[in-house]
Image 1 (cartoon, one colour):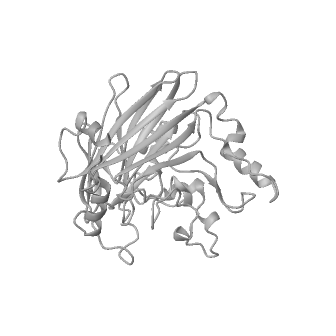
Image 2 (cartoon, one colour; image 1 turned 90 degrees about the vertical axis):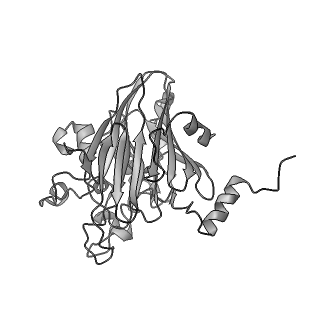
Length: 349
């Protein structure tokens, strides 16, 4: 018979959180699926949020009130964020967030046009699991807009699967799991599977960044010192924030794959691109897009620091191959140099 005299671990975590003994809900899936085109980011004269901040601006324009990302997490005040970025070698842009139609483009209004699934989460987010299906062919951004815009209210929506992009299983399954060893010690496991019967390559950029709360002055945010993240050692990024304090992000390598390169930039708007005015700094939000897609080395900071960082993996998959990578985000008090291995696996188990 099971022992019912003691509460199960999740009930214990909920009790500790309710009593404020431990802040188990400090980190969770609080990162928006998309932040572009919302009233929170609309400063237009006519209140037209969709056209003022469209999807095409999102990779280059710093948000003010929130952030977005792919299968990501953040703390409850959205200070430090983690999410995935992907590139299949075909897309015109780095896949950093979900694509969708605005209310003028969809024949049934606003609509996300992606294949993603939230599979599991405990009440304290001590364990979370989500899946994203990333096509290996060029993502049909324009076709999705054009086809849905032509349809009327009584017509069915034109979905991503209708484009044929998943035919012959030409896609990657990107499974992301999170497990908390403690409220401020978060284990991250990314498992990517090539579902196609042919070899395929994929760029993976697990990305860590600070929400930009320093550009807007002190009228709505506390007057915090600008945060900073930097490379502290091989496989380690240290992120420092005035109120969140210090967090360490560790990432693993694979023996049979090219080791990742650390990339750094600032979470600042590319004003030169969007508004034809001078940038506030030399390195801007869309630097990783320019570096990965266009090979522009000058886009990223040659010095290993900034407010946005990523480990750039270039992965090769044989037909049906599965690759797993482990990461760990932990506070200074929780950090150790032996963050992977059997202890890591046992926490997930």
